[in-house]
Image (tube, rainbow, N blue to C red; front, side, top):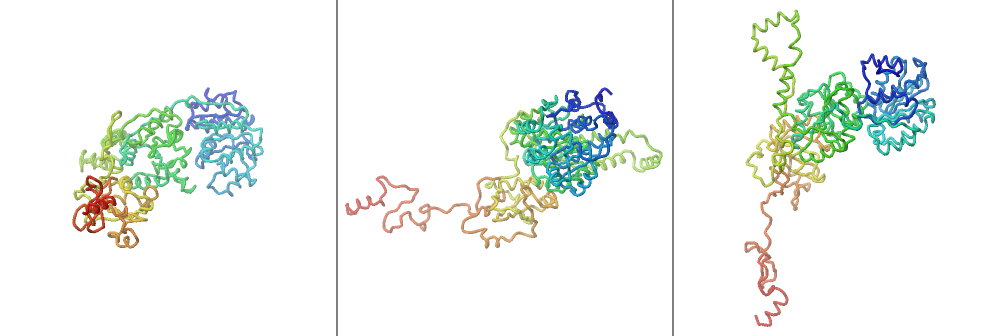
Length: 633
């Protein structure tokens, strides 16, 4: 029990009941007797137990020597978090930590019914947890009285400033009593946080845990290099290789979240999405599905997943690379929490290797560079998991004896084992074959095969000449700067296609018609899911039969000037356009007697542009004609 010395007895009982045996460095730091009653600016890694840390630090001052809280009234402490999920998570942590003290903890977060929160506040609370905007609303409407506050906690203070909550935080801190205790927790301490601490804290103690200066030792960072067209296939193989109890895949945009969610659902993964466009009820249900095991993969944007704590989260995948070191640390900090081990895998396209190396260096992280797991490696890992399954070591129950003997007599041991193996493999998505990438240290020029496109001037050899092609319409055209050089890789990437599945592409001002092979169309429409939405919000509309190009001509799609959409794009990769006419019109004098001469005056000698003037100057010039007249010519 030496670990719990100096802790309020009721809090120590809650820790023991929860199974705590040791405290994390930040939790021990907050129990320092020299810190009692003082303001503090604490920087610690995400997942280091900060919520329990400030719960331990606040308890003596809030209880004021008592073993339990009295009747709830005006709040004694206020905890502020940047997002709804993090605020609700803090509430859950404080509820079990303060269970033995009889504390009443109320949440006030955006997206919830404000009238319900108001009634809860009227009944009384010891601790209020909320987001900055909603807390400000309650204070301005006089439904939250903070005149008796003894302490204010800012959790993830750097993120709150990044999200634009500075004015709300300043309003709350200025409204709170001057004689209060202020604790600020932040993963990093930039100048903006230091300035906020200087303005609203009194002689704050700066606490930096030992783990702040080095990477999280419980997280294994892996940088996996892939060719751009294999990015999603690599994610599938990583998920299959680790088979984590819970995994989270980070994307940079909502559209990317929706696309990956549809793709992985089609591949048989139990997936939920978490993005800003979801309602609070949808976000809550998504997280609950992860917690109770109905879903194992969460695909999320950075803001939506900020601060969430999922039990058993063993794997973080960066589908889109983080833009800065702080984002990398916050994303990766979702795993490797409370002494558990975790993996943070960065999917690195070949062209982004240098940028990723700089990112890791700036974050002071040492990552293992490797290739994504191959299909053979995934299958081998499946076999290892199967052989190590505890189901084989469990004793045979009495109610199973007769059926087991009957199966063995009817089918034999080999057939029964084969049936079990097939059943096991049926429940797992098949891994993907990935293109080979250079090993660490190798350098080579990118090959054309790295990208699923061909040149405009390359002969198609009939591979894109579909007699029964299927057409679709994309909601992007020339006015939106659509070009085959980025459309084709996007179609291959999102639709699980190769260049051989794509036929003609006809661009119009507001839409683009794309021809697929029959098999390619089925695979494409299945991969993009029911939303039929690609990256950049591009919508896909399947067509019945070939599009009406005559209508496009009447609307100006094929005017006198050859438009961009009149290319023959049956095989291309962004090279020079191949127009329907193989040759440009010949200039005057370049061939044929019917070509107009360079000089239009009859009876005068003329020269073509390529012939150039003869020695002595141009005979058609005024000086030459005057000299010829003088000579009587």
